[in-house]
Length: 395
Image 1 (cartoon, rainbow, N blue to C red):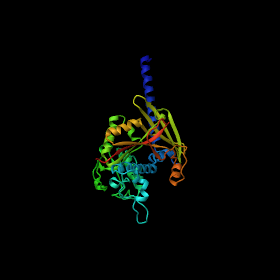
Image 2: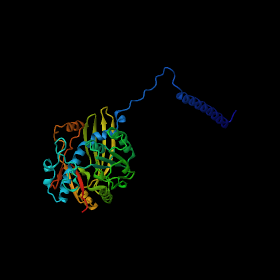
Image 3: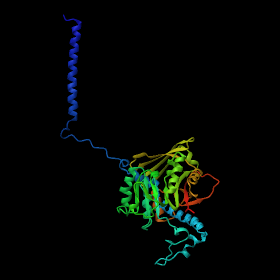
Image 4: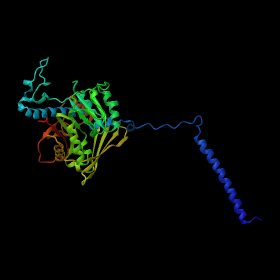
């Protein structure tokens, strides 16, 4: 009679044999599952992509947030007003020789219309900006609108951004849609670099041979929009950029920086939703830090099929006051600083023009003409302003 120990060994051997059989069967089953499907068995259909997965996030951003046509109109208008004010003073004239008398003093063109091009109203005869540099340009839609808004061959734009993805996008999309985009001597030039590393040279010539990897011509105006100054969390970095911009302007030049503010600007938990044609635009504001004066913005889009691009763009901004930015500009060396405030809100009606109607269809409410702000006794709930640094010719 076998011992209990031999029984245990016999049972163990039997169990081990059964385990080997099971592993063999399992291996065969796994192999068969990876084999080609049998004839007649339907293949599993792939899930169709959602509208959010197919969407171009930069196009959505442009439609929901940017207003290049109105921005260019504001830039042109403010430049004309400030050049008239400051350059007339330099030449010893009063403002009666400026735009108010343009219809009487300006020479007539071949059709009998009055024109102010190349007419000396004071210093250098300039009343119209020709060159624009867009720092932090992204997809460069402002550059494109700048040259398309005026057929003058001397009207040029230079875009600078550190992100190669958006510069690539701008070259493939924004410039291709521009009439001069395929021309190697076109009026738009893009540079992929840190804005602090791209300096302006003294050449007034605008040809392609005067632009390099780290240089572009000095310009009449620099636009740093989409709250670009709020990227600089430290004041010394802000002043450094402003001083750098001063050196990139012509002898008379303007630096435009947009800024948000008001009671709402320092409030966490703010959210807004707006219909923009074929999608809905979501804005959220959270995480205000009282000590560092910073806040976080996030932008998202919901498509018609319900799919969502959540937090598609996020920003950690330093919240600067008007006074802080103005003082930083003066410290950087600008001769004067002006503030222009957006006077339109969501309750304003369209003026009936085609441009305005197109913007209303896109959902571009709340953005209109800017008026110069001298002083105010009340803090608005929310506002947008241009803070404009003025560089005057050296005496």
